[in-house]
Length: 499
Image: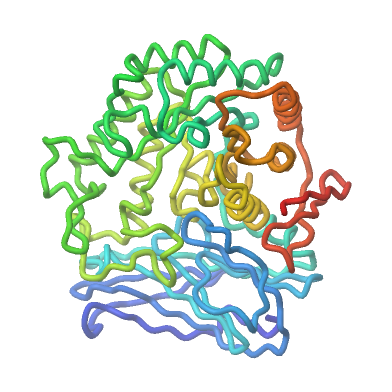
């Protein structure tokens, strides 16, 4: 990318119908280029920008993803790259690195394509699956940022991610403790979680920074659905939170805020997409009030962390694994408020949650990574690990830790997902290594276990002590391994065996 020139670009606009009054303006300041969009009667869908240049180098290229990664991140040769890279990408010859992307919290979804003839950006400013109705409003869609580093790629990405996010929302103290999903898988109770909290308390004995115990799906009346009232296995949620706190553990709770089957929710409060009305529309004031009410209730029970889940799927109809060049695969639908872009709607929803949470920590799962930066304290950056299948943990957990680690403490605290401990489904030799790496990565460390034997308890205790320290860490074998096994930790090479 040595011949790259930020000021040398061309662009086009795609609207519902032929454009007539859409205006796109650009403002450059150094290595940053901001894009503004104004439209009156037109309903813009995309702004397409291209920077032409030629390169003979077959660089290694790493892109990002719309929300969670699905075990498919890695450095690939430029000649092998196809498809869209959301948000940003890095290109390197192993000694110097070029980074190109957009600042966090843009008002549009932005994806890049890159080949030997140049770079193109697709700025998705739609509302739902059609054009946005700006009505004369001007919106700043995004700010492109180009950077060149005479550094190896991981160090370059760390610096670049900090450049992209001016105001990360970071918690005090390291994030660690328990989550009951990967051993209970929704089959849990009040007493189970008290027992789980006791395990966390014992492993964290004497540590001033106290662990969390996050109650995942399974506590509510109807699995994966509201109304968010406790089922008969849980009963009094305020009493449960108080018991967990009495053990010196911080209680957390899971919710899927846009999937609710309460009978008084009317059809027009739901998104009409693909001929169905299933998920709640966050642009509807009644839905916003419902979401805020549930969060306030969980706060009143005494929970100190909210894990909100499934919102990308519920908003746009698919998980990230099925989202290729755009955030939704459905066309011809809109949110109730058609005057805002999809990205603006997502940002408003995240801000609504954060404001309602008050002093609760926010953990986003299935959240849009670049939009959640600065609006969640912790973000699940990869798909589910497992308490049953080691290959799932290796694929999803190790991959996202290695290739999105640069976002840690730059966008939010990275959560590469749990160490799932369910009987002898996964050899402890493997889970112990995964736990060890997490404990030295400065990311979140959550265990999912209902019991521990003597050896496991000792190893967990060691990991809980280790995570309280600050570490310098870097994945090394990143060019030929999607699950890197060689890591530089505090100046020493550590070798892990994921096979």
